[in-house]
Image 1 (tube, rainbow, N blue to C red):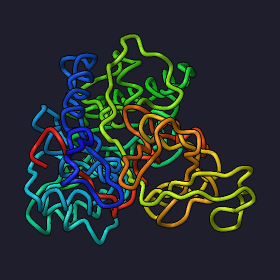
Image 2: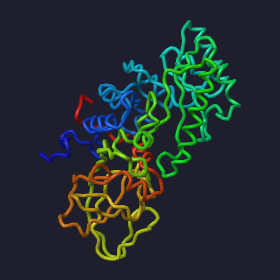
Image 3: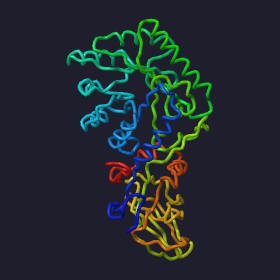
Image 4: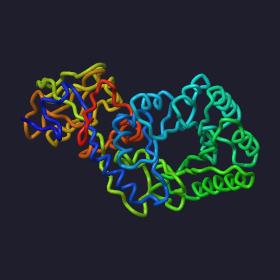
Length: 385
């Protein structure tokens, strides 16, 4: 019986699957722990379904490894994990609509606060339920996205927010804009603004239990900025932030996700024949064409049409014609071993990084893993998933 990594063929998917290695995830967490300040807890960023890897499965594994808590993007992501039995601390990093504050309080989801109006509405909800809610004050130190200003104009509003009934000013955080580039001066400027604003608040009696600013690049490159917590994202999943300078201590990261597909048909076409919608590929010779059972509805971008190579039996085979919704075609004419129906196709993974796809279409590896479609089955190895 043919073995697809750790997945037996009988368990394989009929068209496509992604293998998620929980052993690789554990390995990456241990690597991150090695370079993290001993006093800094690691928040595992599992937003966007853990960058496409599956939030529940990755969250439970990372918490077993010692993660201090979880970071989500939306209240629905957090509530789903609560309903599935995860009791660990978790926070939403951005916007929650006021209509969902009842759930935030009810399910003990720590909230980001970046305006007095948000704090007041959360306070009112907490008081109405007879509870308290932990909040993390978000400071805008130069990202220009959300957060209280750190030029002094936001100080009074922060103080008023933190002193509301039902509000526990538990954390304060910000986000680096260019920690994954060599513009260290801007990162230092952000960090200095962050710490200066915290000092002003402490002088007013507002003291936070947890301070955090480092993302994946910050964890690797600025150990002096680890503070009480760090937020590990893309490096948990075995990928580097694109363009990130070499960190002082190199992490031995292993990609957690490998995307497999299958050859579903093989045939030959004569010179002059065209392939796929739009007829953008014309065979210059007799060409062997293998049809692969993945398309843009699975997350294989149409921008990979006509040239990007998929891997079959260790050989790179270029996509010919446009990627279709459910299929794509590759030129296998020059393969040393003739392909056959059922052969494994590698889109990305350990042998070929998601970065290759990202570079081809002008995006980043984060997007590549995030957009792998829901109909692509997730198969977990190295655990009970």
